[in-house]
Structures are given as C-alpha cells and as structure tokens.
Image (cartoon, rainbow, N blue to C red; front, side, top):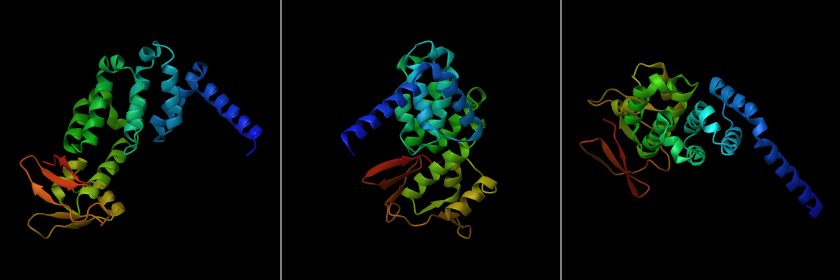
Length: 230
C-alpha cells in the first residue's frame, strides 16, 4: 500500500470514529441498543460508542441509567468474551455504587466467572422483580450455553442433578432436552446416581475430581476451580 493510500485510510478511520462517538448521535446509539434488547441481537461497537458518548457528560449517567444497565446485560450475554470487563470499566465507580442494578450485574459477572452457577441463578431470581433480566430475549439461553461450555471443559461425566442445578432447569424441561440434543450429551439413568456424559475434548480428559461438603473441586488447567453445584 502506498503512503498516500495509508494516509487516506487513516483519515477515513478517524472520521468514522469522530462521527460514531459524536454526542449528536446518542439517540441513534440508544435506539440501536433498544433494538438489541428486543431482538436478541448484539452490537458491541454500537454499545462501546454509546459508553464513550456518555463519558463526555455526567448528565448521561443520570438520564441514561437504564441504558448503562442494558449495555452490561448484553455484555454479560456475550461471555466467555471480555466485553463486560471492558465496558463496565468505562463506568465511573461512583455511578456503579449508586445504582442497585449495576451492582447486581457486577455481582452476576463475578459469580459466572467464578463458576458459582447455583448462586448466579439464585441472584437472578431474587433481583428479577426490579432488574427484569430474565425478560431479555435470549438471556437465559445464552448464559446456559456459556455455563454448559464451562462445565464440559471441567468434567467428562457429572451427576445429572448437579448439571440441572448449574443450569437452573428440570430434567423434563424443553430447554434441558434441547441442550442434551444440541450438545451431544449422553444421559445414563440406569445407575443408582443418574449421570450425564459430555463429548470428549482436550480439556475434560483425566481430570482429578474430589468431593467436598460444598460441591466439587476439579483440577483444571493447573488450578483449582470450585464449582458449588449443591
């Protein structure tokens, strides 16, 4: 690429960023976020631009409080990506501390990343009257897929009851049966303790497992991950 071409490309990119982060575009960015919430889509670039615009004026942290919450909800749904960590870092700590909903979302992210899935769902249910997070299109579906991906990395076999607790589902629920089919799980109900077997992968082979009073500890990637699957 010639020097002139590189210069033109850089100018075009700079122009795009300046226009995208322009406060005059805030209504369009907020409208896109609303569409994401209602339609189950996700646009990280849009939400990043919205957060950048909000940084330009403290008033947005008051008038746009619901949008801050929605940006983090959508970011949480993008796990195992780091969108939540990145976008939440753009919100001043004072704003988070003053918002009950934002503090709940910070807690939910911590619970998911520490594999405390039972407590995650308990917190979702306990705060849902105010946050209404379970009403967000695809929220539960996306997070169950994330949890399933984490569990199958740590386990080759697991008690069905423990898996159901991690997913906050019953064995007869359509959502669980759909996961069994789509993920290729095998259910064994013939043993005294019904088990689920996950397809083999590079992470779930020959993992040391030991029972504890709180649940299970699994040696995984040279560190202990505590999963409270009571």
